[in-house]
Length: 275
Image (tube, rainbow, N blue to C red; front, side, top):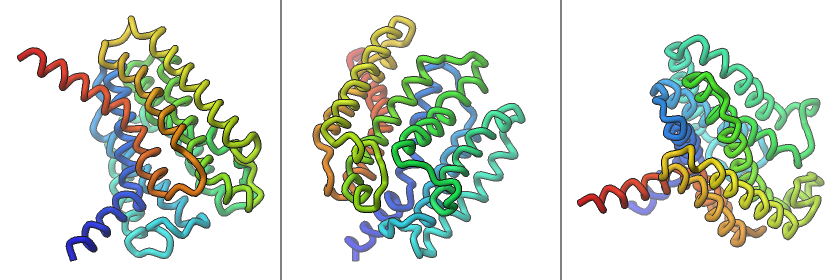
């Protein structure tokens, strides 16, 4: 009975996209640390619930029956509850933040609608770009503009490329299914080996961005943005088709937690060294 309960919790956490919601919020918090400004709790809750609604709707409308939302009352409850909480949080946010969120909401709605409306469908190789745009917009650009009122392009570009790389890793896992369905993902077009080379190049660029701007950052933030792409490169080496979906939904999605995780580890080590 205990195993069944734990399995149900795990299913809810991963396939109900709670894991993805936490990962997204961690990127927002890491942005807060990077710009050294506090972001209101209402924004975190808005992004968390919005992520749950977006991903559960996309899974519900899509063809992948693995997800919890597919033909599931539990999934419908997650969508409805998250939507109610998210709408309430929107009423708490300042008006200028709401206006900044509008383009992100439109792009997110387009991403979900493209799964079912044929007129909105676009080539699979554009998916990583669309997803990276959505994530970098809501986790970096909006918080920076809302709090600091100055665009930090290096931070936004870093976020975009980081998410873009994670999307490529997901596409490596789906390459066989995409090829069978005639979908032109980047790995299907240029091959897995070349996709991994592209990821290694982008990760090297991310490290260089981190090293170049490190003098302007707190040392723990600088270490985080330099080490994170190195860990992504390691998981790139491990990535391959036919790996279980859990590898991608837990570990690859979980790479969004890495910058925050490294930051906390460095803080913990430095704190322990003071005693």
